[in-house]
Amino acid sequence: MDKQTLSFQAEVKQILHLVTHSLYSNKEIFLRELVSNASDACDKLRFEALDKAALYEDAPNLEIRVWYDEAAKTITIRDNGIGMSAEEAVAHLGTIAKSGTREFMAKLEGDQKKDANLIGQFGVGFYSGFIVADRITVETRRAGAAPAEAVRWSSEGAGDFEVETIERAQRGTDVILHLREGEEEFLSAWKLKSIISKYSDHISLPVLMPKQTWDDEKKEQVTTDEWEPVNKAAALWTRSKSDITDAQYQEFYKQISYDQDAPLAYTHNRVEGRTEYTQLLYVPARAPFDLWNRDKRGGVKLYVKRVFIMDDAEALMPVYLRFVKGVIDSADLPLNVSRELLQESRDVKAIREGCTKRVLSMLEDVAENQKDKYAAFWTQFGAVLKEGIGEDHANQERLAKLLRFASTTADEGVGFEDYVKRMKEGQEAIYYITADTLAAAKNSPQLEIFRKKGLEVLLLTDRVDEWMLSHLYEFDGKPLQSVAKGGVDLGKLQDDDEKKAAEATAEALKPLIERLKATLKDRAKDVRVTTRLVDSPACIVVDEGDMSGHLARMLKQAGQSAPRSQPTLEINAEHALVKRLDSAEGSERFDDLAHILFDQALLAEGGQLDDPAAYVRRVNALLTA
Ligand code: ADP
Ligand code: MG
Image (cartoon, rainbow, N blue to C red; front, top):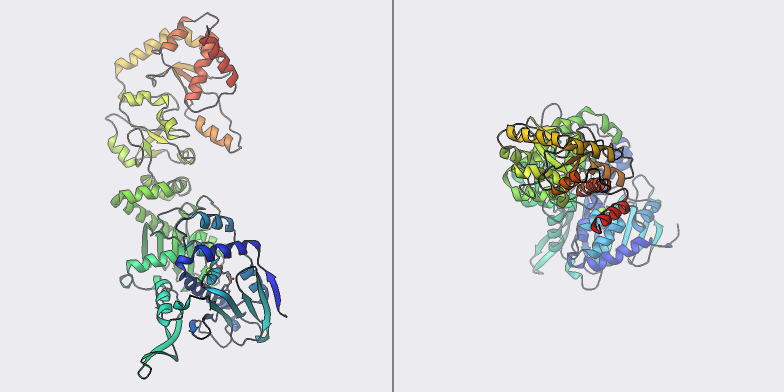
């Protein structure tokens, strides 16, 4: 192929502009990104060579070399990994295949801190070379291709790049950075070494640099022909815990997660037994931008006997723990394991169970010993963890203990265990209410009797709460009971006098109730005297097995049909409006008052009126009467 000039994809141009202008304050990360690409390329070769050993040619030892040329002002990063064909070079270094590019750019533009970790997260690491270089040349030959089929790619990082065919004996890739004016500080063995050991110590391949020795005559360090490793070249998780510092664990986390914040917690173990594996798992402190995408693959990388197999091995973690990052290195799985095989493997099932338990222990530990940290975690990931209640029955009890809610006692951080400790003598159920917002929940008329009796009620306002509650019926042997469903049976909490009084009122109001039932027959399946209201005239209640108004509204919003059966209207015999209604019996105003009572009860629970205009007309008629 003769030399061709091709244009970068439009997104690449934008990325290049942003990267070179925004990340300047953190420019040393270019080396981390290029070494990481070199390491990925070696991983890919090792993987492809599993069933095609010839790809190793005569160089089975995979390694990365880094050197600089002071006169030419270049830095070269060389790997003997998989390399690229001409098509691959054009595709991988001229376009961005990954989704999320637009989010990346929006974030980079908006982010005041110019988060340099974002760059790796979005898979545009290669372009970071242009922060320090005004030209990058890539010379590469794909493993297995003939020397005459190598390719040179070159660009100034503006609008276009050139590609041409070259001869190249060496397999793999050289990335040659022609440094910009003013970037000479990187032409230093010490500088490059220190960046590599800061960011790339854990890379499992040796990163080699030319050995330096002291020249007595010149009175300075000179470069020799000998190469020496400048990193530990042992994958972090294979090292023994006692040899790894907290800082190293944190740095490794940054590398694999591209999260600039420290993780909330991590765990590192070698598991022996029926299936053998090493796990190094991190719980992030902050949610990623795409947490809500349930199709997003997990953040756990799978290795088999230290050979990298795949990123995002979702079979290793349940979906509700998709925020966990880390590495699992199995001693038992076959090296050629595929995603499909993973789904079926018994070893993988054991690994997933083991890892789930570990993560739950980590969270329990934080919840117990670092309450503030757990509260922050809960804000970020709580709603995701709730998915586990329905998805992971084996761990449901442990998960239930980790849940946190708002309640009528505290605006946040109430766990079931706290609630149970505060339960009143004679209280048998855990009471809750669901609503669209905290304010709506707090002001719900159904809470009145509970307030009066000093009973705590959990206020559930997350979208997933209703779904979660359809899987969770009790905690610690105590049933969960909605205060807006069924009749409130406060059981032992109500004394006999109260019960008798209520029965007497119900008896006295019988004619009114019958009249209301007839008037509202198209809207309410029943009307009864309430035991739950103190200050409000009426409220809407659904039967124990029926769908709550809150859930029906959510389904409707989501475009699903919500077969809502008619609710029950409960009226407060002590309220002035109800008394007025009673005395209006037989008058022409009765119907209007009855509908207003019902409409208001519906509005108070956050519902919408089917015919708002009729409501307004009725209220106005009363106001002007
Ligand atoms: P990412 O590494 O996240 O895919 P990069 O921008 O760092 O994104 O690299 C883009 C792509 O270019 C890589 O996915 C890979 O296909 C290719 N590439 C980059 N460097 C090398 C290399 N040293 N050897 C082989 N392929 C490479
Ligand atoms: Mg990369």
